Amino acid sequence: MATTYHNTGSNITQGPVAVSAIYSASGEFLKCPASSTVILKSCQITNTTEPSSSTYYDINVNAYLYDNSTTTTHSIAYFSSVPKFSSLDVLSDNLVLEENDKLVVDISGSSEKASGNYSVSVVGSYLKIT
Image 1 (cartoon, rainbow, N blue to C red):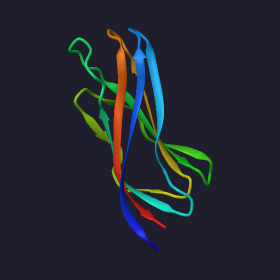
Image 2: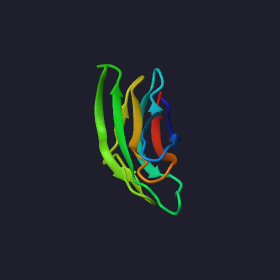
Image 3: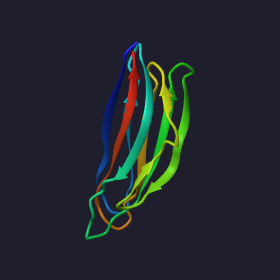
């Protein structure tokens, strides 16, 4: 049995979004490879939306665990707001992913007063067991 530590990251962006439009985007953050087990140690989601006319916007995030063995979805973070200049750690403890399980992050919101690109950066570390 081999164990190795890894870092991973994903950028999730929706844009350009027009003024007063609703936006949403989704991205797969981490999928456990075949014949492996992954222990996710951290999952930090950072609001990386650029300012528009010196105004910054909050982003709503959802993080889901897709359990391949039972074909069910479990919410880790649901409609959590990530304010400007902020990040959110969605794990309070380690999360075990078995073969083909995955963690997916969604962003959503409203562009209210300005058009632009809405984005988050998701970064984490994990232990892979093969």
